[in-house]
Length: 159
Image 1 (cartoon, rainbow, N blue to C red):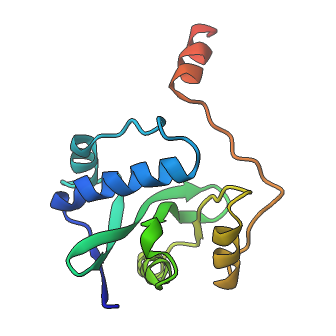
Image 2 (cartoon, one colour; image 1 turned 30 degrees about the vertical axis):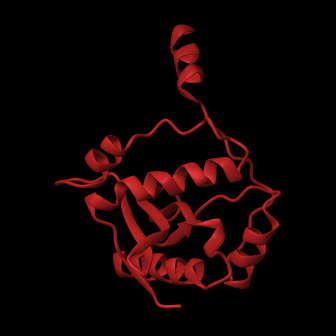
């Protein structure tokens, strides 16, 4: 199987969103995706994009993505955050995930970041095994903390 990893184009965003929806279903959150193609196009392209995206293309079809952005760690400095690495379920096991992760690591290295980080659900054993096989350290003693839109509004209302 011939796979090409390349930087995403604005025209890839409908396929990117399709894969995001597929991930949401896999993660048992089918109605959680709020982002639109228009927002992906607006926020991912232009003078100061909010994210960088790589796609895995097989026979001209986008079958996987890796979406990253930089952030700043008070301990380390520049950090690259891998928001999502998604491979279409029917294409898993063919090396696309490895090739996408390879591209993310090369990109982070070229940026000179001190760390590349991401989250994985504790029940997603295949993903955990995959990341650990690549040398990643899965931090099982950290909890992810979120305030969603309603949580932000509730917080603000108490100020």
